[in-house]
Length: 118
Image 1 (tube, rainbow, N blue to C red):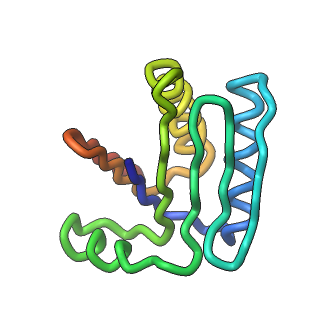
Image 2 (cartoon, rainbow, N blue to C red):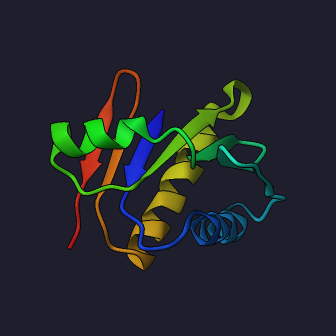
C-alpha cells in the first residue's frame, strides 16, 4: 500500500511527527532508520517508508488525481498482525490529518481512498 500526502515539513520532521503519533497510538516501541533514499519507521504491526530519493510517483499522482502532494509513503503491513496493524495505521493517519490538514491519497492493491482537506 502507498499513501501520498502534502506536507509543509521536511522529511526528517515529518518522520519524527509520525513516530511520535505511532508511540502515542501503539504504546509500543517504534524504530526509525534514515539513509539517503528513504526514512523507515518500523513497528511490530507495520513499517512505513518515506521516499526521499525516488519520488516519481508524485508527478503521476498530481496529474492523475489532481492533488497537490509532495511525500510518498510506502506501507508494509505484516501478515500476523494485518487487521490490528491496519486499524492502528488508520488511527495514526487520522491523527496526522488533524494536526496537518492537507491532501492525502491512500492507495491499496485492490482498494483506494482519497482524502482532501482544506
